[in-house]
Image 1: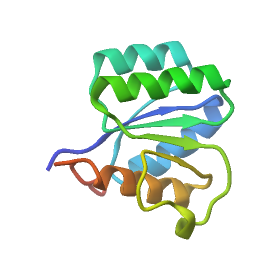
Image 2 (image 1 turned 90 degrees about the vertical axis):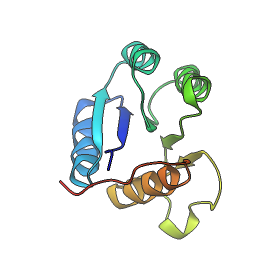
Image 3 (image 1 turned 30 degrees about the vertical axis):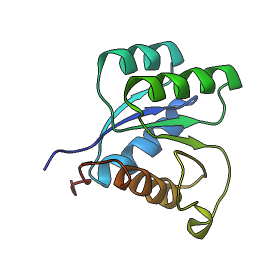
Length: 124
């Protein structure tokens, strides 16, 4: 089974490390950056199953990342920007807004399960 690849773009290195550790622990292959330009370059060169974008970037940067992911391969985008209980995650949609490791993993699994033929995370 193919391991799903996640691009995690965070404003802060410490936050990035926490998110990446949780995602890797759940079995995802994670590429991380705190630089929007590098993230755009990675999106143009590599195939990802999901893009996670932190809330502290300016709106224009979040928009560029979302558009690039959409145009590349209709990659789902998870926008981390607030607190949301798992029950509040919409049943349909490509962009979620939530905070917290449990919510992050739940939203990632929900988005990735919607992709046709998407691989499932493998426990590390």
